[in-house]
Length: 115
Image 1 (cartoon, helix red, strand yellow):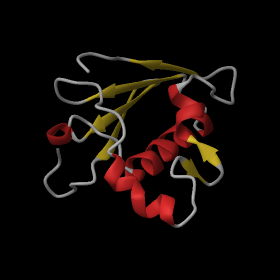
Image 2 (cartoon, one colour):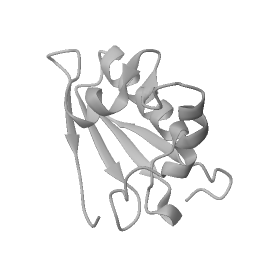
Image 3 (cartoon, one colour):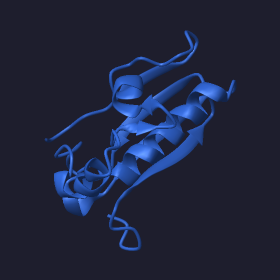
Image 4 (cartoon, helix red, strand yellow):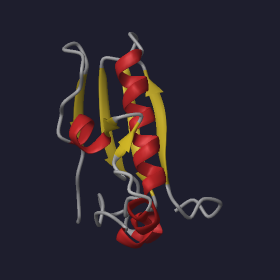
């Protein structure tokens, strides 16, 4: 985990036409936070809106893909009555993690291991 960011982050990198999106919260088994969902949506926006990118790869730093949601981090968002998975009206889970990218010429892959 990035010690300067205990809420985790989505690390991104472009390699040619491939867009890498990495879950980076290894100390917490890449448990997802609302901040990470916001950043994941931003990464999917970049993938879909950049014509130079043809494929996105979602992967995880560390030994495990993810332990799932870090539920205590979602309490405040849920108490505010917001859907914690929506950013600008777009659901990162349904959009990218489930493979529902908006452009037919853009593809998404997931690399998993461990949990």
